[in-house]
Amino acid sequence: MKRLRSFGDKAVVGFGGDVSDMQYIDRLLESIDIRENYSTHGNMLNAKNLHTYLAKIFYKRRSDFNPLWNHVLVAGFDGEGKPFLGSADLLGTTFSGPHLATGFGAHLAVPILRRKFPEEKPIEEISRDEAVAALKECLKVLFYRDARSLDKYSIAVITEEGVDLKEDEQLESQSWAFAERIKGYGAQTV
Image (cartoon, rainbow, N blue to C red):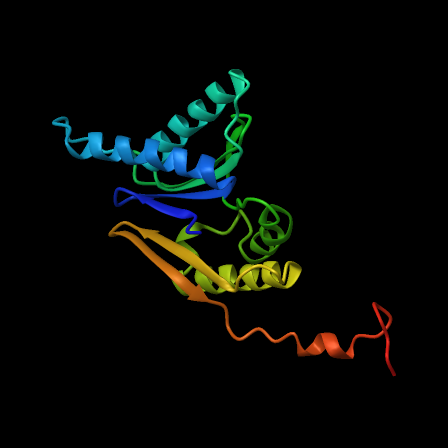
């Protein structure tokens, strides 16, 4: 299931959680995207505005006791051209920060990202290759945590020039051969 959606040329929405609710949100975003593209005012929604819109949708549905069982991340640029990364969950709780993730990524990947890229380090000093390598390391850790998941992923890089979304990327060859040498767990035959 593809869980990244490009919105315009300056924002990406990443979904975690229920697939049917994700499809509902995707339809909402598609209708907004169409309305924005055909509007005459010429202003496109930026990532910060998109994040605010999604947070209000989540909060409204929660208040109606019919929550959307998702956690979304919105990445891109705000109205002033500054990088933006924000989160909204099923309760309508929102926050933004330099390191965010959904699901197990919030527990396993965020500490890796915080270690590699402390908040004191200016974002301008981080190269694209460094950032992509760090994300691949996080995905490798997450894959080893839950080996039943797929080793395929999607990655989006957002720059001033636009969104570069790559789907069906694959982690480097993951070998579970080391598991054969582990003793003391499960059935043992010596």
